[in-house]
Length: 160
Image (cartoon, rainbow, N blue to C red; front, side, top):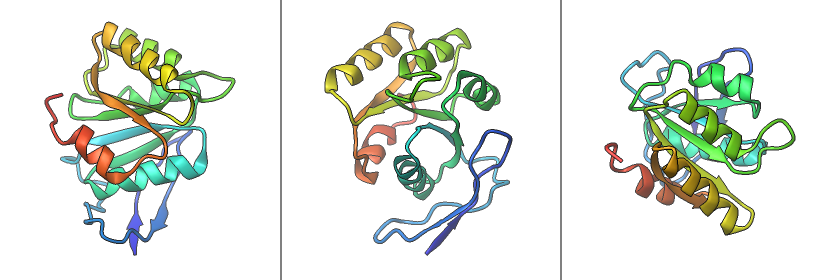
């Protein structure tokens, strides 16, 4: 059993406990400034919690952001180059992965970007291509359901 502490701010989701078999534990200290932050933008609670748990087991602090451009913009305002944004392509009526990629490019986000989707692969490829065209640091694209091994492969090289 692992208790995960997430930084809590307005528009963000809080603390959860997970049991992850065979997954190495990452740091639990919410004040650990050396850990990179993974901003997870996902409208489905189960998928969001799974992605956060995988990233936390890899040593990331996570901030689950509400799928609205205002909340996302506010959330990633403090991001640095070692941080990661994980974006679901289909987020709902407020915004989608295309909007988030455009906003990250406008803000000159220096961290890595991972796009994911449970929908058609062409949506995933299109958002990936768009992020690449905006010269964002694309770590990769994932089809759902996301697994810890696929996240580890994408995020193994922090220079990407």
